[in-house]
Amino acid sequence: MTSQYDERFRRFSRRVEKGIMIGIVACAIALTAGEILIQYVPARAFLIETERLEGVSDKP
Image: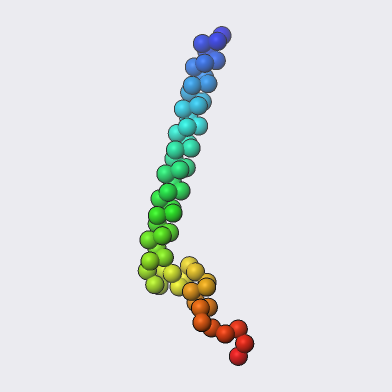
């Protein structure tokens, strides 16, 4: 009984660990891609609202 429980727990924990690692890598890739995207002016103008509003008065 105990060895069966241990084996199931090991399999489950490996799957969870693999999922966490994939999530960390995906977040790191998304962060890097976002940082690279905001280096290009057309993408920065599209993604960041304050870039378009910089220096524009809200009163006519």
